[in-house]
Amino acid sequence: MTIAENVHEFIEQQRRAVAQNPECGNSHYNLAIGLLGLKRYEEAERELLEAIENSPTLAEAYVQLGGISLQRGDLDGCLGWNKKAVHARAGFSEGWGNIGFVHMQQGNLEEAIYALEKATRWNPKFVQALTTLANAYLANGEVEESINTGLKVLDLEPDFAVAHNNLAVAYLESGQYADADRHCTKALALGYDVLPELQDEIRKHLG
Image (cartoon, rainbow, N blue to C red; front, side):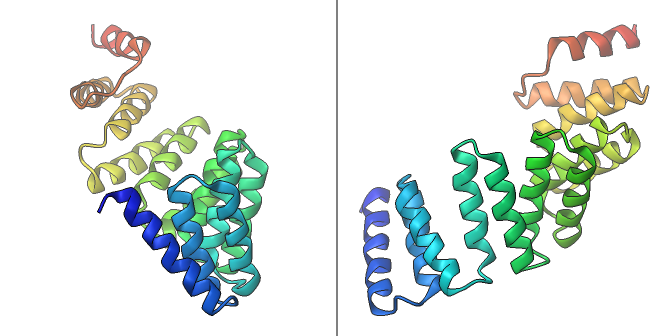
């Protein structure tokens, strides 16, 4: 059975579950996930709204609705749904991470940092949130915090090229040129498209 056939079979199972118990939020949620797998966003959205109608504390459903909003380019909608997610479950790190991501996209650095710190406090191994937080610190002029957070990312994923690139930028900002060069070289070795301007700036300082 192909992956597509598996997804269709899963959807049919969930449709039967919904038919047997229309007030089960989890069944509507599971059906929505299947539909999202086929990029049937409008149908998935309807099922997610049914899910939260029947299970108002189902934080994952709010996050998925936020994802659909993001897919449509609606950052404010994405932010709103993720705020509802963390209201439904205060310690829901994925919701806080998404809130931080949207605030970063909108240039709201203080709000981004607040949300991303929450996300990583609830889940210290949340690599994507840590990476975004390192960027937010750097954009806010908190270079040492950015470096420390970037190193936490590498503790979790030593070959994460984006983190090496970001550390190269942060070390350059802090005047630690040998460290900047080391992380720049590693990012390149891992296939990351490091900006030529960054490479030139590091080489210039190394002489």
